Length: 121
Length: 110
Image (tube, rainbow over all chains, first blue to last red; front, side, top):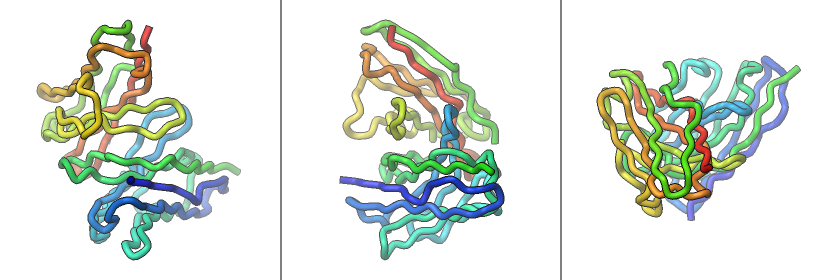
């Protein structure tokens, strides 16, 4: 079955960097576009970034553009999110998600359990 | 990109039907047939309920249905069950090649 497991979260000071990983299993990773979505404590979902199945096309929310970079290693079945110049408002649970090949418009059919990133001095 | 507008909360009794609205603009909800709905229980990851406005993934109960009119999409849950108590989020693809979520709706089953 499809399994997505995020790791790399933790407490980091403002301005510092952190890299999240998402290990994928149970499906052909290279055939699917992937996403990162975050959720601040007690708040709603916020889309962060998208990467195409061949990992060549990437899109970002304005709130992270220029600071965050999504990448994927199809040989390792792993998705990454490099987060630089972190801000207090980046504090959230970060979920990786798989694009649903059943439909268009970026539906996310499988989600990881999330990893908490806390940005605080 | 502003979040889509959802009611903060809705409630209903077991067996009843409820509808959650999701209002956007012609640049997102109104411009595409690309609205999805998610259910999220406390402390859990979201679960896809509806994609492309009205399609259900395999395994999702047919008590969940979606529709759209103009810039507003709707999720209807019929035959409410206690287990339906959760937060619900809509999302839409946008003309800026981004994804935007609604603010979320807390469903209480009375």
